[in-house]
Image 1 (cartoon, one colour):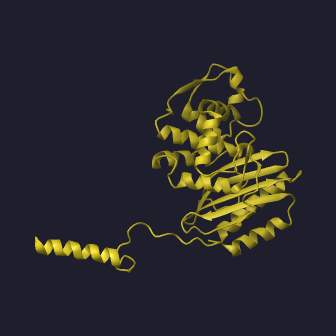
Image 2: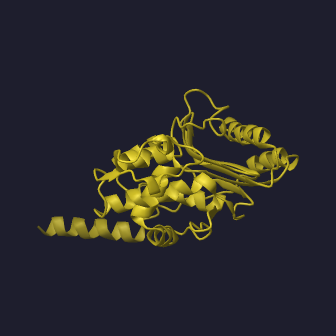
Image 3: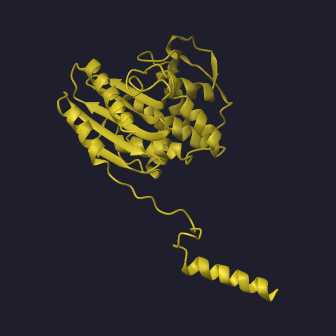
Length: 282
């Protein structure tokens, strides 16, 4: 017993005074050194310099922490990009047991948002849908009616206060504004399983793959690349934000724009080119 006690005491002493030695286990995870990727940033700056309008770009390697930002805190009209916070809060509340994905919602005439994207606008009132189906439609089709129903069910104040607690300080759900920095923070929280369980996280991200708008971040990437993303469109702006996995590397990339005039097609091409430049850097 004395020998066992001495061995335990000696081991604890080594861990306390020698925890930084390479042959001893570290107590807790060591902090990651995050480095600004200035070379990659300069390539993107050179590309967008000649383009019409304003570009806000955020990049972060989700393994190494390397990053860069260009106008990343510039607030812009979010359009459908702000559907991601709605669904993220929905999954957060479901994980807390406050909402059930199996709950059924009956489509009412007042719910129908007869504009923009999505299939529910063409459905007759009286049809029923599960909460999970509405979440999937919100992200895959960018369905305005589905997101409207879910936002009302959760409550605008609940959504705003929840994302504020997550550190999203430039995302305004009432005025439909956000920044690429906030979207980076949100997608990283989703990716790191800080919103919901591992299985539900995979499900949430899967709803943002193979969407009805694949003409930006994914369009110039290799066929085996995985992209979980959300686009946004409006008069004078085109957006795309999401998590990309290519060649074994996973990173966040968000591109938000403003004041592009009638250059929608060109802006889509530039967003795709930005994603290609980042992917090629690996």
